[in-house]
Each structure stands twice: as C-alpha cells, then as structure tokens.
Amino acid sequence: MAEILYYDYPTVTECTAQVVSCEEKDGKYLVALDRTMIFPEGGGQLPDGGTIEGAKVCAKILDCRTADGEVIHYCDKPFAPGEKVRVVLDLPRRLDHCEQHTGEHMLSGLASKLFGAKNVGFHMAEDYCTIDLDIPLMPEQLEALELAANEAVRADRPVHTEVTDEADALSRTLRKRAEKAQGEVRIVYIDNGKIDSCTCCGTHLPRTGMVGAVRITDAQHYKGGTRLWFACGDRAAKAAIAEHNAVTALARQYSTSREELPKVVKKQMDELASAKAELKQKSILLAEKTAEELLKKASAERPGRTAVICGLLPGMNANDLRLICDSLAAKKDARWTALLFAPSAAGTDYHMACSAGCRLSMKELCAAVNAAVNGKGGGGPLFAQGKTERQADEDIAAMLKNYIEKAVD
Image 1 (tube, rainbow, N blue to C red):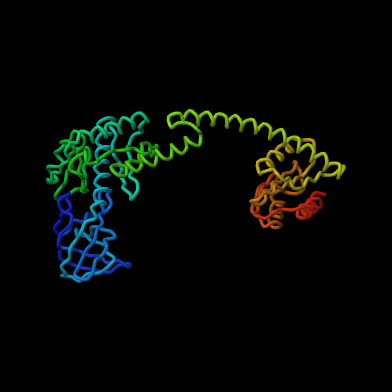
Image 2 (cartoon, one colour):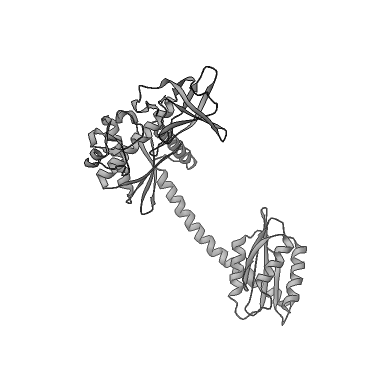
C-alpha cells in the first residue's frame, strides 16, 4: 500500500516515488506509486491534479481514484514499473478544493447548530458546489447562515484532524459520522467542534481564515428540504464580481442605480402585466369581430349549406387563430367549418375547427393539411392545430377549401 502524503497539507507539494504498476485502459494509463500526495476523488471532493515526471516522460494526471485500497493515478503517458519518478501537485487546484470543502463543513456545521438542519448530500464540481439539507430554510435563515459562516472566516478559527478507531469515533458527539467506517477514522474539527465536527476523508485548510469568504449563490426547495449552491475563496470572489457586473449592466439598461433596480423592475413588471391584460381583451374583441366577418362572408358564399371558412390571416399568430376558433364555436346556431393559416417568417401556424355535427372530423382534416404543407399537428373531431416551416399561400388555401367543401356537402 502506498505511503499517503496528502493529509500533510500544505507542506508536501512534491515528492519522489517509485512506480509500482502501470496498466493501459481506455486510452489512459493507470499508475500506482509507492507514495503520493495526490488526493483521489472521495467524500464529495474532486481529485487533485498534477504531473508525474520520469527520466524521459512527463505525464499529466487526468484523474485519481482508489481501487482495492490503492491510489490510482490516471495519466496521459505510461511509465515502467520500478521507475523512479517525481510527483508534483497542482497546488492552485488543491487550494480551490480545500477552500470549498472547508467552507462546506462550516456551512453544514452552522446550519446544524443554528437551525437543526442535517446535511444529507454534498457535491463538488469544477465550477459549483451544492449542499442538501433535510429541512426547508427561509431566505432570512440563509442570510443568517451566510453571515455566520463569514463571521467564522474573520475569526480565523483552527481546523484540525484527529485519527482514531471506529469504537472511539462512535463514542464521540459528532455532527455527522461515516456509519460504515472501519479501521482508522478521520475526524475533522473546526474550532474544536464549536463550528463543526465530522468524519471526513477529504483535504482541508488549517484555519477558517484561509477560506477567504463564503457566499451562498442560490437555493431552492429540494425533496422536502433545501439545496443550496455556494462558493468559497477565489470562487466566491469571482461569483461576487460576476453578479456585480450583471446587476450593474442591468441597472444601466434601466437607467437607474443597482440599489433602485428591484423597484424599477417591479414597476415595469406591473406595467407589463397591465399591458398584457389590456392586449388580451383587445385580442378577444378582434377575434370576435374577425370571426363574425369570416362567418358572414362564408355563409353568403354557400347559402343553406355548411359555411366553409378557409384562408390566410397575415399578421396574426397561433393564439389569435385559437381565439377566432373559440369565437366561432360560441355561435351555436351556425353550421361551419374553418381552416385558418397564420404565415410568418418562421413558417405557418394553422388551426381548424367546426360546429357540432360536421361530417368532416378536424382530426382527418389536420392529417390532410399536414400532408399538403409538410407540417405536424393533430387534434380531435371539433378542433385541431399544427405548424409547418413552409409558407402557406393562396393556392394551398384554395385547394384545401375545395377539399373541405366536398367533404362537408
């Protein structure tokens, strides 16, 4: 088994080692060494990165995992078993992971102490981290949690690890423990347990002040609890800058300050909601008027028979067509069938409807229209709709009108 050096952070950033084995798999070379400071993926934490340098080859460490108790380095180049190599840690990557992982302990420990919330999930990705808590937290609680975490950063409390056995670990009061832990058990304490105490196999910073800052970037209700996204250290600074730039750009678009932006946006949303309501009423009135005129014209063309309404309505959209069909459907004393097209730059929407008792099912008519215009759509006996990327024209409308007239007579 390899000698493990990664828990001695931050003193060990490179070491000499001997290659124990090297196997090729899926285009990568799985290298085992007799000693390493490269942390393998585990405990929700990403693996370290770095390089392995031999006499003739310098390989990049693409991934690192454990297999049968051994640390396996996934490299882009091979080494010979027995070869002496130099292992160099990607220190910025390790620092980033330690910042996120230590910050996670602080947030989880404080969420437990402040609100009795249990951490039921932790995930660290290359560009974000999440914590799943078992209870819902309100915005004011999330704000209090973030403030408490940053107060702990400023206090610069110690972070230390104790290695013990399973029996002793079970006797201790911990926020969270690995129930299946066997052999040596690592326990991480922050401020001697005042902030957090938890079994953990990851790498951490020696003091909370090195986390730099803790920022909760988002939160949502998840499986009856709360999933929160967070960033620490350099990630927190970059998140704050990105958010600042986005809010500043938006404020400039509204010709206001960042502080006044929420008020200005709300005012515009209220105005937009009012305008939408007004537009909806006007669209209904226009649809009723259009339906009345179309039915009147179609009835005059076929006196005593089913009125056939078929044509193009430029400038209208799918919603307008639906409103016209609804208005026609409200005319219970009329016999009619309608096929309406709304051409636009993106193609053509089409809606069709008929009065009760019509001999032609709109489902059947929609299939015919789909075939004629290479469109997609469907519906039932009284209503159907579809869309095509083609531009419907008067010739297509005339052909389909003739088809409808023969079908309903």
